[in-house]
Image (cartoon, rainbow, N blue to C red; front, side, top):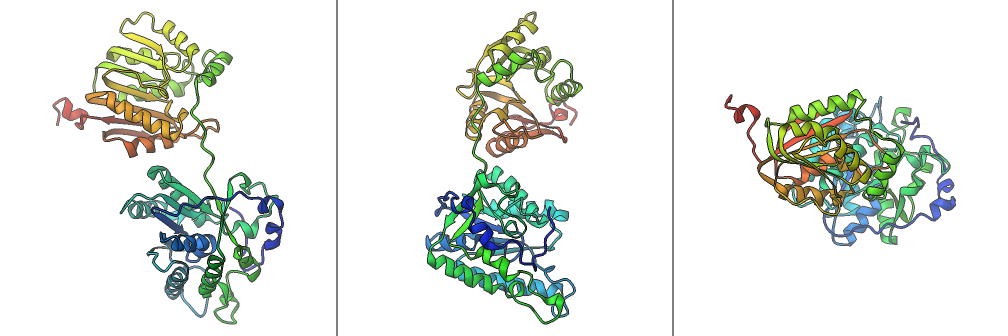
Length: 453
């Protein structure tokens, strides 16, 4: 977070508008159909950061829904004019008036969480937003406060919305508000590579200007008392008097990693991920085997077998095991490792092209899903489900720390899996380093399968 005072003028608007990088920002083709939800951390964020978008969508005949997460009660601490409850009431009225000017048919929901305290109720915020976003038709476009905006409430709401956008598979757009106040064009925190502009009609610009004025408690003093001063300096407000709306678009999608990447990795090291000598890997294999609900499986498919260390242990619980990897070098080493196990077959195969043919009682997808882009992963998971035998089990386990080169994170993989599968979640092990989940076509627990319950 950064330190700033909204009552101060901040960086002059002209510093931004005169910068060549700002003038040359690429335009974003705003989606003007389907369901759009605009989420604001505070009353007035929806107008300052996304008022033009609201107006444009209204004119396109596709008004967005508006959600305000906090009650706005903390904007004037110590005010002799309005206490916190009265302030929350005034700010609700202002939101209604402002949104009516921008988009008269937009429904408005105020969740009412405490202004300035969203970090402390983050789980409740996520639950509320998830319930709202999953009620009704699918969300196509989610517009929210930018995670890097420098205000912790903005960060929390932005992070929660980013998580939900991943779950829902919708477009995520984030709008900066305070960046224009504390930042400068040369600040290395400015995401120039992801900034885009939504071009606004003259009609939208005028309506946004009027809507900003409707937030009277923020743009004008409540009384001569210093505690009642306007929270937004007029010089700062000029940053929103533009003919464009600026948003932070999602990172460009990284493509699926192919065999060449892994062959090059194995060419540099016999065991690049430390399967044979790291306690982390040994422990993870033990967790993986312990999480399986049945003592033995008929036909097993292991995706991404690497050099075959887990393969050798899975073989002890399989009548037949097909282990595949995209890397020729890895497959050669795995074949050497399991050469004494006649029930194991190791093949070169890229599931991004085709999932192996067969009917499998167990599919193991360990540390491989994040090498695929989102669309490919969804398709592969669907194909694996089709290959799963009746009563079969699917185990997924992935590293949770970010890796810049990978198209997805481990958490991304499991969100896609949860969103797309019809299998029952049988077990989950979550820790800082890894996430392991077991899904089954047989919903019975281990105790039920073995007659204990």
